[in-house]
Amino acid sequence: MSLSKETNEPQFMEQNTVVLLIGKSGCGKSITGNMIFNASVFESRLSSTSVTRVSQTHTASVNNRRLTVVDTPDFRFSTHTDFDSNSELKTTLRSCAPGAHVILLFLPLSTFTEQEQEFIHWFEQKFGAEALRFTLVLFTHADKPHMRTLGELIRGNGQLSDFINRCGRRYHEFNIKAPVNSRQVTELMEKVKRLVSENSHSCYTLEMMEDEEKRRKEKERREKEKKEGEHQITLERVRRETEMRVRREYEEERQWREEEEKKEREHQITLERVRRETEIRVRRENEEDRQKRERMKLFKQIILRRIYVITVFSVVTGFVLVSRKDSSLWIFMCGFITGGSAATTGVCCGIFWRLMWRSPFISSSPHESPSALRHFLLKTTGVVCGLTVGAAIGHLVGGNLLPVTLITGLAGAAGALTSLQRDW
Image (tube, rainbow, N blue to C red; front, side, top):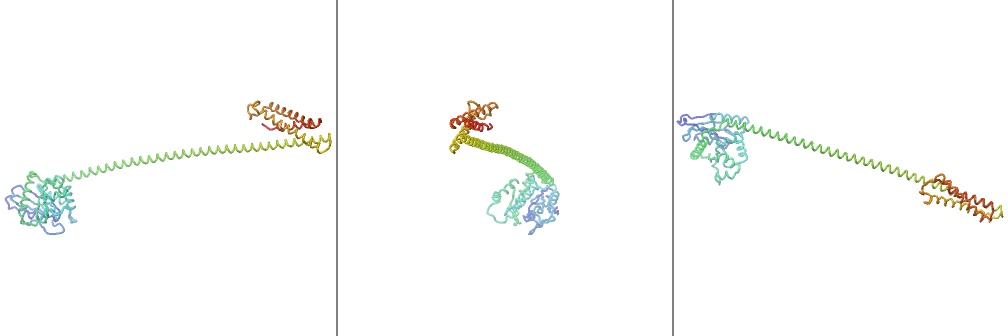
C-alpha cells in the first residue's frame, strides 16, 4: 500500500476523516479521489483491466477538513491471477487507523446489471450488515444522458432500491467527466460530514469485518451442521421407509407364498379326493361289472340247466309213452310235450316260491339272505310243489300211465330245483 500525505496544512491538527473507496474496475474510484483533492494523487487512465493493483492512501485538507482517502483495487472482479483480494482488503483496513469513517460504494449510474447485483451481494456478505451504517452509495458516470432523475432510476429497480434503503437512503450522484465542478465535491463532503456526525465519529474497522467473517463462518458452520442434520434425518427417514417397505414387501411375499402353499395344499387335497373318488368309482364300476358278468354267467347257466332238464325229461317222457302205447311219432311228440310241460311248470313253481319267500309277507327285506332252515324249507316246498304239479300234468296228459306220471313228477321237481339253486 502506497501512502501519500501533505503535512503543511494547519487543519491536520483536527480529527482526521477516513474515506474508503470500494467499487469495480472502471467505476471511477481513482478519478473521484483526484477530484476530491483537486489533484492527480491517484493513478487513473483508460484500461480494460484494473489500474490500481494495491491500495493507495492520500491525506490532505478538503474544505477545511482533514481527509484521508483510500483508493482500492477491484476486490471482486480483479483479472490479476496473483492478486489475493482477501489479504489485500485486510491490509487496507488495518492501515486505516483507527478505521474507515465512510465507505464510498461506487455504482455506475447508466447500468445496473447482474454483475452489479453480484457485487452488492459480495459487499454485504464480506463487510456485513454493520458496514451499511457507514456506507454512502456514489453513482458515477452521471455525464451520460438519462430521462429520469436518480431517485426514479433507483425506485425503478427493486433490488437496488432495497439496498439503498438498507444503507439509510444515503446516495450521491457524481459526474467524473467534470473535474472543474467543485460544487458536487462540496455536496459530497457535506454528506460525508453528516454521515460521520450521525455515527458519532465511529469507524468501520478490521475487527468488525473479522467478526462478521467469524459470524459468517459460524453461520455457514451451523447451516452446514443443520444441512448435515437434515441430511442425516432424511437418510434415517429413508432408511426407516426402506426398512418398512422391505418389511412390507417381505410380509406381502410371505403371505403370497402362504396363500400359494395353501392353494397348493388345497389343490393336492382336491386331487387326492378326486383320485380316491375315482378309484372308488372305478372299483365300484368294476365290481358292478364283475357282478353283472357273474349274474349273466349264472343266468346263462340256470337257463342252460333249465333247458337241459326240460329237454331231457321231454325226450324221456316221449320214449316212455311210445314204449307203453304206440311207437308213432305222434305219441312221441305227445310224450315230449308232456315231459317238457311238467319240467317247465316245475321251473315256474320254483320261481313262484322264490318270489313268495322274498315278498314283504314273509321276508322283512327283499335283499335279505334266508337262513339255512328257511332255505331248506324253500327248496323242499318248491320241489314238492313242482313234483305235484308235474305228476298232475303227467297223469292228466299222459293217459293215466304210472311211469309217465312218475317221470313228469320228477321233471317238475327237477325244474323247481333248478330255479331254487341260485345263491341269494
